[in-house]
Image (tube, rainbow, N blue to C red; front, side, top):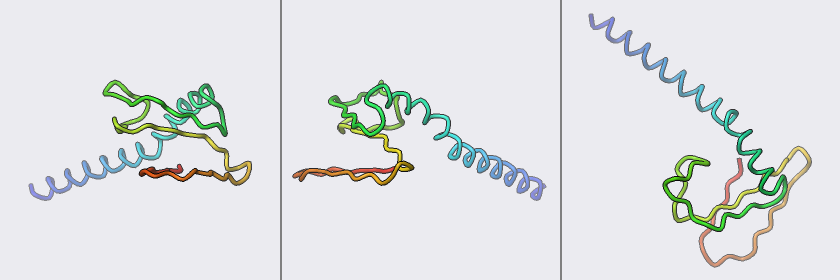
Amino acid sequence: MVKKLILGLMVVMVGYLAGLIAHLYFYPQEVFPEYYQKIVKEGGEGHWVHWRHLVDHTFSDFPRPNSDTLYSYCLADLAKGPVVIEVPPIDRYWSGMCQ
């Protein structure tokens, strides 16, 4: 009885992990084309897009945005060569992320 319970739990855990790995691998591939089309419409490759408004609970472009953060983004194709990003001096906190 205990062996069957342990085996059943192992099967559930393996199934859960397989689903989690599949989600982590395929989610960006499903969502990126939608974001890419939005970026092309808003400015295109190599152009910064700056949001001048804060988001609220109805925002759904990406999961869990900060409601007190202004966002900017740019799509750069590194296959065309290196990209240099120059940032002017900033007297407050800021952060950057590359994906």
